[in-house]
Image (cartoon, helix red, strand yellow):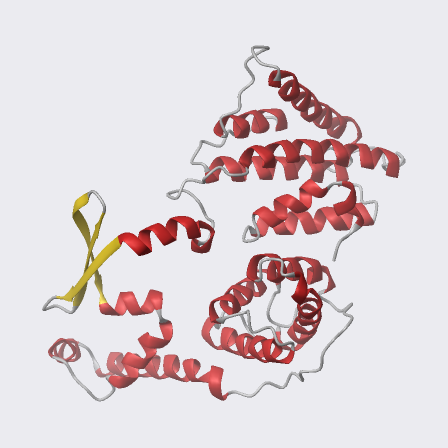
Amino acid sequence: MINILDDIAPSFRAAVNRWPDAPNIQAHYTDFVKTFENNGSSLIELCKSFIESVCITIINELGGNVPTNCSTTEYIVSALDQLGIKNTRGASAFDKVLSAHNKLADALTEVRNNEGTVAHGKDGFLDAISERHARVYILSADTIINLILQAYDGVEPSVLKTREPHIRFSHLNKRIDEATQINAKVDDDGVVELSFRAGSLEDGFDLRVPASELLYYLDRQAYVDVLDALRGITTEAMEEDISESTETEVETIEESVEVIKEESELEESKPLSTELSPVSEYEGKYSDQVSPLYDFIFHSILGANSQTATQVQNLTYTLLNGMEDLAVIDWSKRKSTRSKVRLFIKKLIKLFSLREIDENSIDQIVDWLSQRIAGGDK
């Protein structure tokens, strides 16, 4: 799954791997690779904007203020400032390195203004960017990205600001899970009260959440199971609601509960027409998603386990091939659509013996597909 661009400028791929859950960076990289491979006219602009995207992402992750309407160099300076790296105007030897990178950024901006054909209109008879010049632009951008990523390596994002998933903070999660005492009780109104005590937090703090909200966000299947268990049972609160509601409103509530139950049962009962035939090569309508999907499963889900590389590659091909049939379903019908796709992925996991992909990972793959592959008859 390695392309020529990764050999020339590995820092672009490193940025993609650093933020596997960032859809804009993932899509940006895909566009960049396609432009490079096809000698596209927007190569310079993509180099520049990729650098800015990396800088803005880091500034946000560290809780800083993102500058607006500024140059690429200013974005770089702002990102490095958040990382604790400043140009002290000759006070240290490292200042020469920072100055050199700033000059590279300025040069890229100037080249974009003079030779870029996308950001500003140009004469239609101008020569396209030569391969030799393209490599110079890419190597310059790669050098800048490498400096930024090296500075960012080991820096802890702001937990209050970050968009990274919970699993990214496993070292922090372990400390909290091992040293926190939790007491739970339910008050007369059916609200769950969780009391947390940890370390020097003597008084601790309490969280109050209704049972329905807790189940809805933590375990959707349990939410549906409770609804099913309560079918035919009327509580005092329900009696008051019913007495104040019209007959039509009651019927609507019952129909909604039935829909939720039917959709939850789809995962176990609804057959799929898609045949589970392994696909060793794929060049279909979603071929542009092969590399991003492979990278997401291989690096983010499985942690780059080389022993599963071939299995992941075949799963990627087969999954995207199957999505050509499955994508006619409507993503807006979230529950039923996800159930169909989850079922297909589960069968592929068994087919390719990738049992390392658990239920939570399947949900992550479905989320990824819902963002990248349009539903309907497109």
